[in-house]
Image (cartoon, rainbow, N blue to C red):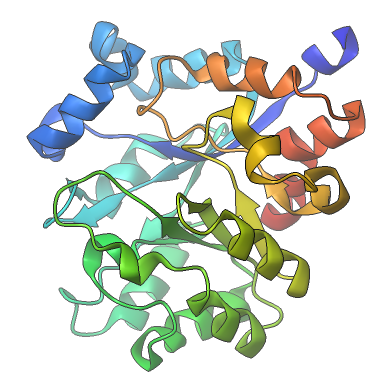
Length: 277
C-alpha cells in the first residue's frame, strides 16, 4: 500500500465559496462536520493557498463546483468559480445551470464552455426539476456534442427546500439511453433510498457512473456489496467543505478490503477517463 499512497488523486466534487454565499443552515452543517474550511477560512478562500492545500493532500485535479440554488443552499456564481480557478492547473471548473432563472439555458451553457467549463453540474432536487424533462435535453445534447461530462445530484439532502423526488436515479435511465455518448455521473450514488437502484443503472448503462461523495467510506461495501465487480464505475469525490479534512475520506477508502488496482480506479483512473485527461 506504500506505493498507492504516493499516487495522485482526482477529487470530483469540491465546492468553493464564501460564507456569505451559502445559507445559514449550510454553514451550520459544515461547521458540525468540523470542516477545516472554518478553522482555516482565510487560507481556504484564497485560490493559490487552497490549490497548495489540495496538492499537499495528493490531489492532482479537483472538479470545482458552483451553486445556483437560492431556495436551498445559496448562490455561488459561475463567474466566481471561473475566477477562483483561473491559471491554476489543479482546478477543473464546472458550470451549473438553474433552468428556472435563465431565459436561454443552452446559450448560457455554451457561453461557459467558451470560457473553459470542463463539465456541467445539475441540482434537480435543489432547483425542483426532473432530470429527464424535455426542457433539460438541449443541455445534454450540447454536452454530448462537446464531449463534456455532467454531474447530477441524486439521493438525499438535509438542506431546507430540497425535494428528494427529483433526485431519484431512475430518471437518468431515460437520459443515459437517449444520450449514449454522454458521460453522466450520479453524485452521491442515490444516497439513502436508492443505492441498489443507482448501482443497477450503472451496470445497465455504459455511460452512467457512481460518484461517492457524501457517503461514509466505511459503509461503501455495505451499500454496494458487489462493488468490486463494477469497480470501473466508481468515482471519488469529497464534497468539501462538508467533511473535516480533504485527506480523511481518502485514507478511509484506502483501508477498504479491495484490490490495490480497484482503489486506484476509484481515486484516479475512472475520473481521468471520464474527464478525458
